[in-house]
Amino acid sequence: MKEGVFPHPRNCSWYFSCVDRMKVGFYSTFYFECEPGTVFNDGLDQCVFPYLISPPCGTNGTGSSTTVKPPVLCQKFDSSSCQVYELCKPLRTTKTLCTGCFTYFGYTMAKDLCKMKGELLDKNTHQCVQPPTGSDLCRVTSTTTFPPPTVRPPQRNLGCTEQNKRPYETWIGMDHCQDYNFCTPSNTYLYQKKLCREYFQCFKMANGFWDYTKEKCDLGELYSYKTNGCVKEPRANELCNTSP
Image 1 (spheres, rainbow, N blue to C red):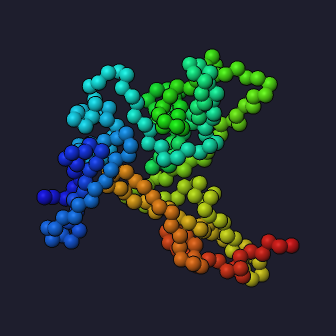
Image 2 (spheres, helix red, strand yellow):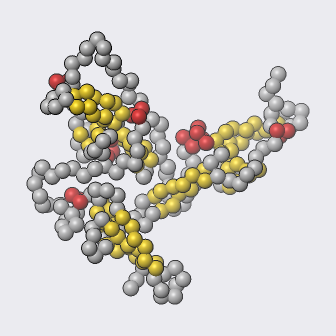
Image 3 (spheres, one colour):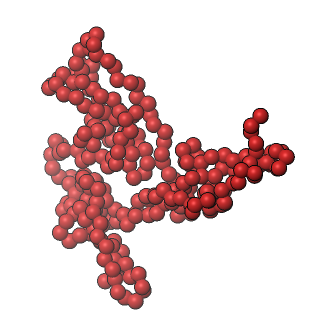
């Protein structure tokens, strides 16, 4: 027995980790399941799509060209990046296609997830598909309303590394932080601090991918990315008086 990550002997979608937490030769075993549509690769120590590896768990080099495409690992979709299509060919149906989705790595564009250029993400099946052609769409009548224009949501990527497990990103500053202007008692400007209600802590999962959690400081404290720690929340008499 040794420490490490190993494939499940009977199920390609599972793997387990052996850890000697006390360093006394007693190993604890932890089981993990891959994301839907993926299998564990022992050589890479991570979950991958079956078409990327060889049998018995993979399909690389086997099967026909009509093999069903694996689903993309989307966690959720942003409605502003999706558009509803009314299709009349080959059958009348409605499809919601998106230009991106949120994965474990943050918001990711379809062009970075799909193999073919121009493909979009089907919100229902989580698969990459070609957008419908004009001849596939239902004829627009005077009562038909067009969907709102697709707007790409702001990026929510977080650059986690071993050297920086609390990275600062622009979207964090916009959504979770505030600039505080400090002044003397006579209201003379001194300096500015950016302090945050929440911060994001990175951690590495057993499959080697990064994930993160949203954290808060104790009551009466705010987080400073500059000092990489919690600081006292500014008092009113420390801040500049902006009233006339």
